[in-house]
Length: 291
Image (cartoon, rainbow, N blue to C red; front, side, top):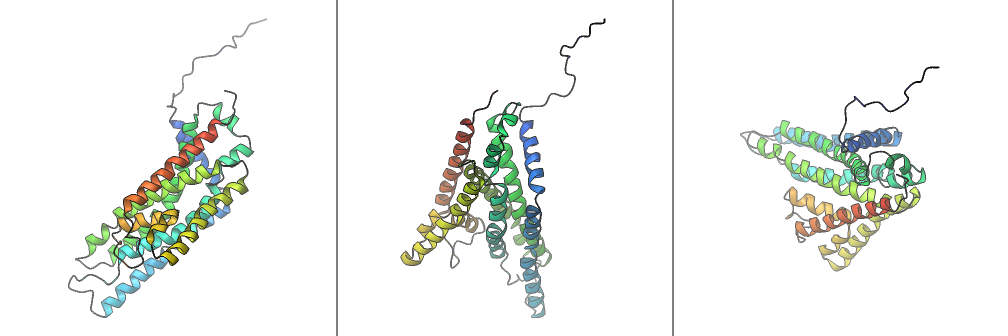
């Protein structure tokens, strides 16, 4: 009887870096999210919301052209910065919060409930790689939901711009990109951090909604009675709004949060991001996995 060697053979395939696990988990998370019809419809709705501001820009262009105000290189009466900043605000409440409630605020909770961590961590996937992959997936989705509509509005502004106003409108793409990135980082880290609070998705999803709504309503009421914009520092949406107004240079307009310097909002957001990452990492360290 022949004796066959059943020992290990030399692996001749491509040896990938451990950081490749982040890319794999990123793709897996997006594929998992895309399987939901709620996510598909929310993305479609989020991108079509740009048609409203774009239509307003086109309407303003034809109205000023008919009145003879958009000839000879004169700037249009349409304020592109205010339109794009308002679009970000609507996207945040109507699209970003619902979709992150669905796929962001329950990521770790679902993995705990489904006992998926023994599968993840017995492979060459560290807890840091896991968090990076999950947060990158949520962040890239949020960035696409906010940046693509802003890009469409910027393109519309450029196509309807007077000769002397074209560069000014084209440069609106820079603060739009920066604002979308800031929103993506803050939302992704805080959502995943909240998802580490419990293994019950109902608890984490409720906590995520309360984090957005309760402090925001409370700060609005405090501002109404005290007439001080500093109360907005307790509200996550207001902190992001403060950053957006600074990027688009709208701090002097009525209703803005210009009395609160942008670097205070940036500091609070930085602390919130760091605390969210720390909470999620601590939660992962408490999970016992045979390695």
